[in-house]
Amino acid sequence: MYPRPFTYHRAKSYPEAISLLSELGEDAKFLAGGQSLIPLMKLRLSAPRHLVDLNFIPETSYTWSNGEVRIGAMTRHAEIAASAEAARIPILRDCAAGIADPQVRHMGTIGGSIAEADPTGDWAPVLLATSATVKTLGPSGEGSIDIAEFNLDAYTTALQPAELVTEIAIPLPAERSGGAYIALKRCAPVYASASVAVQLTLHDDHTCRDVRVYLGVLGLTATRVTAAEELLRTKPITADSIEKVREAVMEIAEPNSDMRGSSEYKRQAAGALAKLAVEIAVKRARGEHVEAMHLYA
Amino acid sequence: MPEDVALVRISVKVNGKQYAREVEPRMLLVQFIREELNLTGTHIGCDTSYCGACTVLVNGKSVKSCTLFAFQADGAEMLTVEGLAKDGQLHPVQQAFSECHGFQCGYCTPGFLMSTVQLLEEHPHPTEWDIRKGIAGNTCRCTGYQNIFKAIHAAAAAGGGADSGH
Image 1 (tube, rainbow over the protein chains, first blue to last red):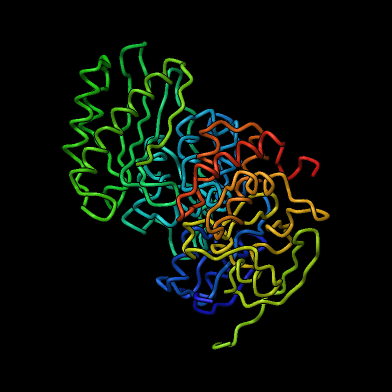
Image 2: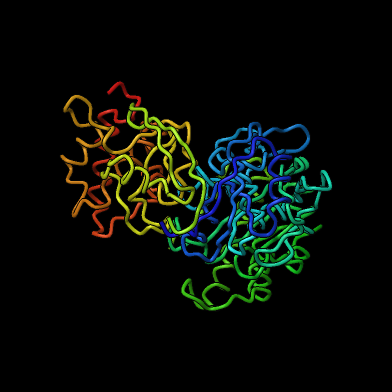
């Protein structure tokens, strides 16, 4: 057994989990789905003395919609992928259905994923593009954090000690909106090499009213590409303007070379993904049903 | 045990049989299955959540048992590869893998069988893309995928989901 020995605490409610973690201090961690934490513990890159298990707390896994889509923090990626409520915002399904592989999606949770804040995580660019809000609970009570204020750095969020994510709320987009999230991966179980999230609203079939473009994976946190947004916002969307988006993304992306590819390869990939994501987002905003699939290479 | 840590009592139903054990919190589910229950059909391959050789079903959902603590399955119903055959009859998915030679060395096969059972429950008539998505978490290092695809198509034709009445 590779993880360092630890003491197990099964929480029956979020308030109990929070008071346990407050008492146990810095040597304790929450356990959500465990799909990031358990591999880290097996490598002893993480070695908590106490785990506070959130998996047995009732009513923490749900997807509702009423003006916004509200997803319980312990909702598994596979449940979100299968949810008709989440499918009202297609980019959510793109993300949930494309995370890792079926086995990981059955365990991994949206709350655990964003609290982990791994730079290669899939949810951050998607939740940023859709202006999500993170609902929290901690020793000082309930909180609500704009996702843009939530991700501070790699593996660092605005969560305070013993504070946890309870829910993610995503406002339902205006009429004539569409989005797409596409990642380039060497294969399903590994981290993506690059990813792009685009969410836009059309004024009419050809003119963009508003848009968000975020790159995942390539920096310590997801990167907003305002230069690309400005090429589209309030302007006609044409093959030429989409090509300029591709160039703007390539200009802003500053990926490091690593085992997933050279800096230049990833920059080219990000540009191509952005072009594809804008094309799909526009089609969806026009009411077409288009599948957005990750690229595996 | 190197440090004094309270054991956790867990009970699980595996392949229809109830088990109760006290385990160290850090015991992984795959170790629990293999070492506590002596069900060694579930293999440890990469042990890093990549290869899927350790795939089992927990409450009807495929998981990588090297990436769960045993306590996460407390109260669950589980299915491992040993639970597929009934009364000396191979499960339709096993039969199809056998007939199509959907394996080479066979080490990854238990995981592929469990992922295929899961896939066919969700997609009784899978498309090529459904199959690719369904087994994306399983790796065959012999690269025997073509026959695995054939086997999955054959299993689907034979109605191979776990709830197919087998």
